[in-house]
Image (cartoon, rainbow, N blue to C red; front, side, top):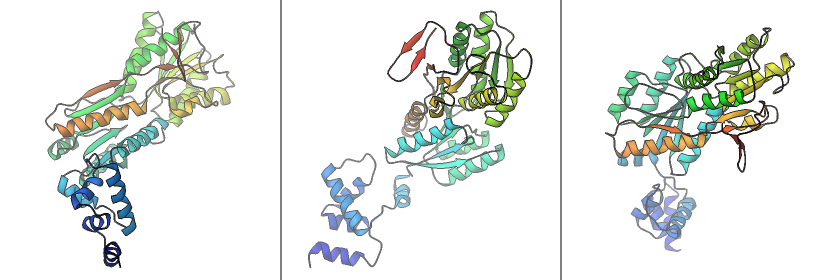
Length: 359
């Protein structure tokens, strides 16, 4: 019997350890530890030999024990309250994939009411997560203080906050409103409406501000404002209210693609309107569904991948320097032109995959 066969036989009666992997692979125990540590230095040939040995004896690294030793769990908690919105589904996908590239994992918490949010976030802290990412969710002052005491950075995606110590990443919200207004005005529309998110959403307010201020500057001051609450159902209700009157808008800007889908469905299926000849509809986010033929939505892009990438960069900076001040980051976007809105005659920029418009 060979030495390796004897080692394998002895291991079968108990859970294998790093030391067992080292013996089977013929390497040091420190090499095994490095092979299972994201970013650690180890030759690729050695890593492959160690992984093969680990599989052969059924070894799995004890992440809990390692987190106690390093004081890092390699787990990032994500609190999210609006998963039915395709944009936030994209955020979950991007965060999971980008963290996996560095050997880290996502711990997902879905929240609803404010009380539920705080309970879920407190629970997240009990898992000794390395950082907390919040999307369509908000932290209380008490929770923020708990995170600061525990040394857990908080990063909010697509949400503004005035609480100290919370970093934020968002898109070009005011520019989105300005650019959409310029596009619709250049397309010779007369009656405008804005489907906002929730009344307390700073992101929606910024989009509304850009939209209203640009239209006001060109003499269009009578803009109807309704609140779709970022949900499909409420957006459909307010779309009916906008379209059932005699002097209905011929251009509707929605604070999210998800609400724009509802507006298009109501306009075409219930009112028999032609989009875009009777009504132009524009959203924000550029979720994958916006390119589907059912909507063919013109939209201001808010790239989830770029937002998540910046959030991870911020997390790494805050972990490396716990005393660092909160970081605020804005991610650029473009107006992606498809078939849901009338088009101006000029201003188009053609790139490889999308038609982009600039005034």
